[in-house]
Image 1 (cartoon, rainbow, N blue to C red):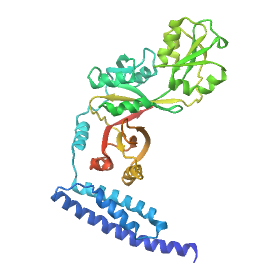
Image 2 (spheres, one colour; image 1 turned 30 degrees about the vertical axis):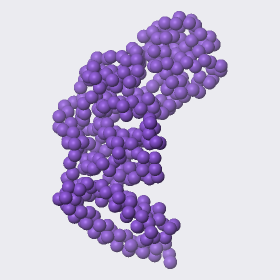
Image 3 (cartoon, one colour; image 1 turned 90 degrees about the vertical axis):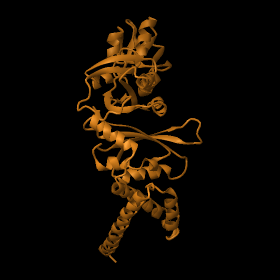
Image 4 (cartoon, rainbow, N blue to C red; image 1 turned 180 degrees about the vertical axis):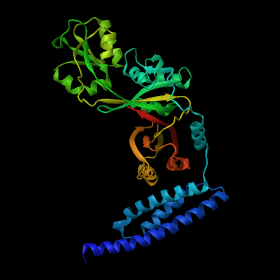
Length: 380
């Protein structure tokens, strides 16, 4: 047989499969009506496990894994169809719809905004990018920002989430598990680290460099080029600049911004010392209330998944079945658990799409612990 002959056979089989798929989905609609009448949940894990075992035994062992993956996808599509038929409603969906209806059409130009660090911090720059006239409140720690939001001290908080060079800010993800908040907007900001020192100091005088651990990582190549230099980590790049200024020393330098050089009367010994010219940090703006502004096309969720084969695969299969693109995935161990992880997902989908609402139709299928963090627009 020629390749064209094999393809004709594939086409014939596909025609049969499509017809059978249509028949299967029709039955899923009928099942949805029955479940609605009897107030049964959409997701039936026991039935799915039994079915996967059964179909796996119907095929050659070499094809068992492929067959089970195919049926896992069919289950996701079937649940999605049932959710659509039942017009399944739950508290989370109601909250999202209510937030869409209640949120003002324009993002607020001003507000009391919590940021970590001191005057001149990159978080301050991100806040000023997000808000036209923010009323800033500085906190010594990331947790202080979360606490200020949760306790109503500030309307909004701005926090660094990840850097294109140094990766994720793990402390933020850990705090996300402990606090209730919503992400209402995000922003990407170019980060430019400069070597700052007191007047009269030269690079050859430097014996110690101080900065935030992320900045130190982002400038690792430059630091190594200086030879035997002491590295000191501190809470914030702006705090590092202030520390150098207040020390009065001529053997210490900070990795910080140009604005901090002006603010603390420091000289720029060498500009733009980060390893990558395309060095961006993504900041999130959080609020105590769920606010979903027009145009929201990115959503963030967190969920705990058990430490067993296939748990992450099944979750990703749900996104795939709904045609939702995944922008980011991050995992963090859950303290005190038996190898369980909390997964963070950034999803690229319009808050107004049918797929978005279907995703939240049956939250019980999303994991034992599920947390919707918000839907928002990201600005550059």
